[in-house]
Image (cartoon, rainbow, N blue to C red; front, side, top):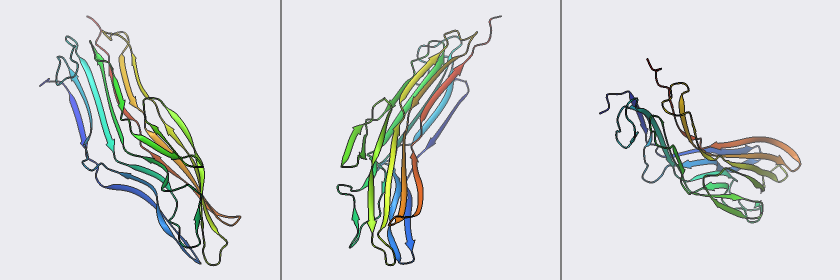
Length: 247
């Protein structure tokens, strides 16, 4: 018990979240496919966020504080497998870019944990991203990288599916795109006793953003275009503490 203000929230994701495409043309349809899909883990862990003020150490937070105390916050999230940028399955007479299989981008999971404290003797902010594997189409094959703390940008290769539909030339679905991995950062400002200037701490676990452009055409005649974007979002823990002036 701290007898101080605090708050918390928990959310347990469940199931599969997806966006699908189903192309219907006068001469027939092309089989449906997932544009983007995000799974939850087989044993989902609750997403959690909290904020608290402590005048004394409590529950592992503000472990070195006393007097004016400190404020603490934290957040955590986990996701299952993510895939973005699929082509419709091919049938008899259809074709797809050599070497392309599955999707433009896949991620075998995502996990993020962030914490921050501000005030008297706060702990250093932390931000951690799980070392999951990102796999992306490079134009001739697939490249894989392990997510670390740094940011990165990856340009996706072009992938084309060609489909036979009665009354049309070959209907093509062309995909291009990019992947942006935001960095992991911790930023602290101010110094105790935080009276003249507020003390702040911001811990950010950058997310992964995928953008895939779809261009549909009948031979050389454009039929339409659209963009699919999957943004896993940032996980942020932020605190601000400003003590009352001395009497």
